[in-house]
Length: 369
Image 1 (cartoon, helix red, strand yellow):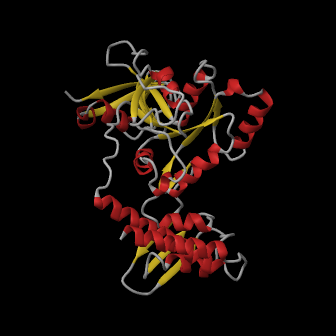
Image 2 (cartoon, one colour):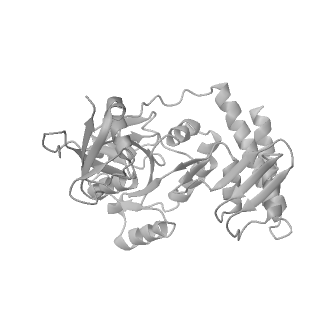
Image 3 (cartoon, rainbow, N blue to C red):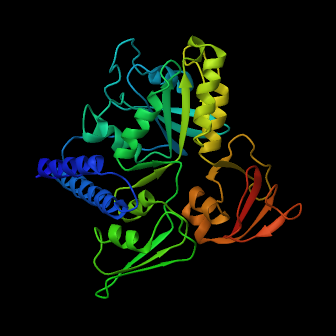
């Protein structure tokens, strides 16, 4: 059954390729794109129900998980070993890493789990190699680290293509679209902003592939592809960081052009040499930054502040989040908290569970006995 759906998708893709793109055909093409997205959702659902492939049985540990993604022999294993001391096989031939190898990078008090994933190949999103398992693992990380070779500037586009084909959206947020299904009345469309790329007719044409009766409210100026994404069930939005490896093998001008090109695509980028260790400190800092982690120093009642082992939380975390991470009793028996540092309005501020913490706050939690 899966191959029948794949044949349908291929046929529609050929039709889109052979259709001249103009104002008169945009609704037709939009509907075809939506049909492909719906068929891919259906195909993925059937494949997951079929239970094909074992996947990687890696338990997420630490404060955050980062997946290292790239083509074979790019230096992922070397990088993992440099940053974590994990024992990952290294070789100058393809497919040295045949499984997902975990390691923990300790940085600024945080335990950050790094996963050295097997090398991605073209066609991974269609299941080639161990593509389906690799891409499934990427869907569960907190940060995707796209590792490319300084000598192969085309690698990034190829990786992005595979990730996009698997429903992964890098450095994007879920489109602000609200779809409320109803029993009858067809499809109604309302927007709270001016839509420069979509007409009501096009929106209804795309939506009809997914819903029969629904009220649709669009609250940001989105594209046709973003609208399709908002209906699809398999989209995952993942922060991404680009790492250019083997910087020692190209000249400074070539490296700078490559770096600027990536930055122009609004993607954070770091240049390193995993072999020599150059740029690794900058990479650690960038990983910490892109994960949006903050350090909270705990000060137990009547004791000194513990600056050696901070509590690691995510940006915009509240006192309640801190209580939950420490122990459920802190939340259950909570009386009040006192905070000093960046989030405090004065030297020591008495706060409740909803107080939003900031990096390097000092926090005391007072509970009922």
